[in-house]
Image (cartoon, rainbow, N blue to C red):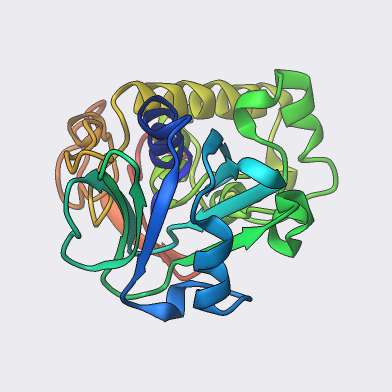
Length: 267
């Protein structure tokens, strides 16, 4: 599933490519992805509207249109966005601009969703989102852990605790901090939480610079892979030597998710 760095990359690229452009047509091949309103209503409300700005909240892409309308994309597990001159393979909904470019929402498994609303902040799942990690200072980050007893890796991935962090970057950040992903939040000393904070931020920022991690369906809007895979330290490196101590990387299932760690470096 695309996480904060991937969705931030898409939002930044869309800002450069589609800001100010008018949507002149909507081509729907899989109606399932359009939520809450009929596809015909969705199409009629969007056609003729220009893109005002593109932003991100957690793992969600928000496109502000004219007339105070917001187009919301949630890529979820298997979705991606491609800007091209054609209808792409696996395109479920495509938005045609006046220059004939098309923004294709592609999804092989149809788990993603698209919404058109007048106030994106009122969406229930967005109202429940925790803070953006890149907006927090060290003190604010540490305060989040007060009274928490959950295991650290699923806690970092909990979107109501912290918005945008998923399986890849939780693992990479904890390896960077030397923290075992099964440790509970109530066992950490302040200096350990400080280390998690700085590792999380540096990992997310570096992944954004490399335009995300392409390990499944994620790609940039031009179809290219993100460039962060060569910089992964533990994710999907089972049985390979730890880059610090040469101990083989292990894989465990924690809270239902595959998790990679170094049993020697992460305590």
